[in-house]
Image (cartoon, rainbow, N blue to C red; front, side, top):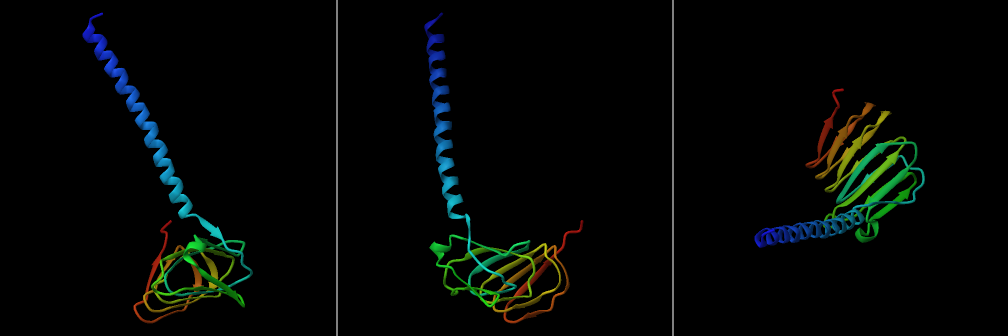
Length: 169
């Protein structure tokens, strides 16, 4: 075999080894980034008792869905100093308008009312019941997606917005 072919095969082997090593290193780094992101955006369950009313203020992004149990989950409740209280069946999402956005998920079998103010974003998803009272004010954005609610009186004030989405299927 000629010397040039031997050199070419050796260089190709070294490049392939370098490529395989680089892929494994990038994979490990990417996995570390994904794990860190997942830990920072993981929902943590907050112990709660019966509730059928929600009062949301300030910078909250709350997604509400229907389920058998009363569940309240928040992303990083410790680092955000989230202030949640259940007083007489009403869960209060407290905070101030200068705080960082807090994200929560609520699962509840039935809701009587939702009151939101400040810069909150509230999304009611796939809910079925007879009636629900909604009161939104300030810069609240209320989204109703694929719900079946017979009577839903809504009172608004300020720059509050409401969007109703339905699934055509």
